[in-house]
Length: 269
Ligand SMILES: O=C(O)CCC(=O)C(=O)O
Ligand SMILES: [Fe+2]
Image (tube, rainbow, N blue to C red):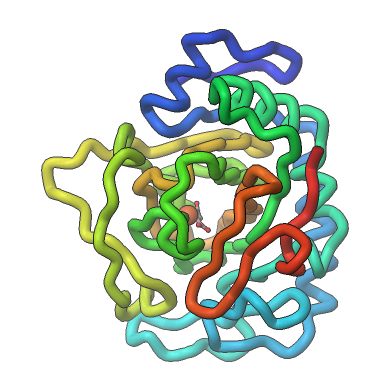
């Protein structure tokens, strides 16, 4: 998989790789900014309002601090799984998704869509995962399952603010899986907070091992998961958001995610 320095443009084969394999990893794209972003995430966590146990608290009128569960699926008081709508809790989040280095890559990927190139693009569904030692973020899923659209024009974005490897819970992907739909079922135990896919045992799984400040862009239909953080001391801070053409409307289980309606949807360009 291609990795590129900050200022380089994507060439056509990299763009086609993204649309064929379903993902691209930009190692260290935001490396200089990563320490300051981590510090602002710490500040956000310090100012945390009352937390919720609802993993799908996507429309609470502000950010939702969602509690983690143990291996029996029981809520752990005081332990945060994720901050949903994190952009509504810290301005650092939108600064990341609006940063010139990230926007340039997103624009270049959209420019490969032929007649479907969007004029305006938003980011929505922003999240922060601290991934404490022993913790998890997600099991196997397609992001679009949670959006209520199978559009292939949503580009998911993971920003790994710390060095991330097999030990502290790296991202895993199944290359090329973004052209199929998979059945999602309610999870249990450590993964009780979501609906997940059981991948075919023959599926090729790739670990995305990256240095701090790396940005991964992937098709929102790509099948992906994150390993459990098995390290005794390291965290795995990361931010997520989904780039979407401004005119693309969709809703899921009573939440309308459309531009101008959904609070955690923000124009990028
Ligand atoms: O934690 C990760 O590495 C992936 C998170 C993710 O896939 C999501 O939030 O949809
Ligand atoms: Fe995801």
